[in-house]
Length: 346
Ligand code: UD1
Image (cartoon, rainbow, N blue to C red; front, side, top):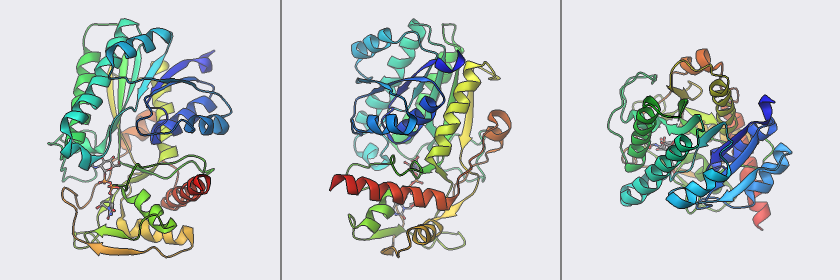
C-alpha cells in the first residue's frame, strides 16, 4: 500500500507546490494541501484535480497561527511526510518588509516541525533556494560551496530555515529525516498549459515579465544590464522547468519514505547544470512563441550576480534525478500558460 501514503503539502496551491501536488497525486499519494491562499487562488485546486485525476484534500490554514496549525496537524496526524513550500518569496519586498518575512517564513516552519515531532510525523522536505549561497563566486555551485551572507531578508529566511531544520532533526525526538532542495531559477508551467505562475502585481522575475509583455499586460521588458562579464553581456542563470522540479520532490519523498537517505539531513541542488543568459531566454521565447518581444537594455539591477549555475552531480548520483526539459520547453510552457490564464480571465 506504499502508494496510498498521505503527504501534507504546505503551500500546495502555489507555483511549485501545485505542480508537486499534481505529481504526487498522479503517483497515487493522498495529498493534503494546507494553504492560506495569500498568493494563490482556490481554483488551482480544480486544475490540480483535472491534471492528476485525483482530488486533493484542502484546508485553508495560516501555518503561522500556532493554534490553527496545531488543530490542522491533529486532523492529519497519520501522515508520512510534510513538504513545506509555504513562504513569501519576493526579494525586493523582503528588503522593505523584513519582519513580515521573518515572521511568515520562520514561524510557519517552527510550528510545522513542532507538530511533526509531537505527532510523530517522520519526514520533511523543505523548499530552499540557491539564494542561500549568497554572492558565491565559484562556479558551478556545489552543495559544499560556502554559505555567504544572503543579499536579502528573503534569502536569510531560507538560510535560517535550513539551520532550524538541521538542528531540529539532529536533536533527540520523534523525527526521522529531512531534505532541503535548493532550487536555482524555476520557470515554465505544466505542459498542458493548465497550471503555471500567477504573480500578483508586476512580476519581479524574468519569465513572467517576458510572457506578460508578450501578451500586452506590460509594455516592455527591461533587460537589467548588458555589460556583465558574460559572452553576451547579460546575466546567466540556471533555469529549471517547474515540472522537473516537482518530480525531484517525488524522488526525494520516496528516498525518505523508503529510508534510502544517508543522513538525518541532506541537501541537494536542483537545476539543469547549464547557464542561460537573459538574451538566450528571450531568443528561445521569441522562437517558441513565434513573435518578437519588446525589450530594451536598462541599467543593472542592484544585487544581481553576473552568473550562477548549479553543479547537479549530487542530485544525479544520490537521487537518480536529472532535469529533462529544455529551455525551449520552459519558455513555450510559460507562454502556453500565460495565454490560457488570460483567456480564462476575459
Ligand atoms: C531570484 C531570487 C531567487 C529566486 C528566484 C525565483 C535571489 C538573489 N534571487 O533569482 O532566490 O529563487 O528569483 O523566484 O534571491 N531580469 C531582467 N529583467 C526583469 C527581471 C529579471 O533582465 O524584468 C534578469 C535579472 O537581472 C537576472 C535574470 O533576469 O539576471 C533572472 O532574474 P529573476 O527571474 O528575478 O531571478 P533571480 O534574481 O536570479
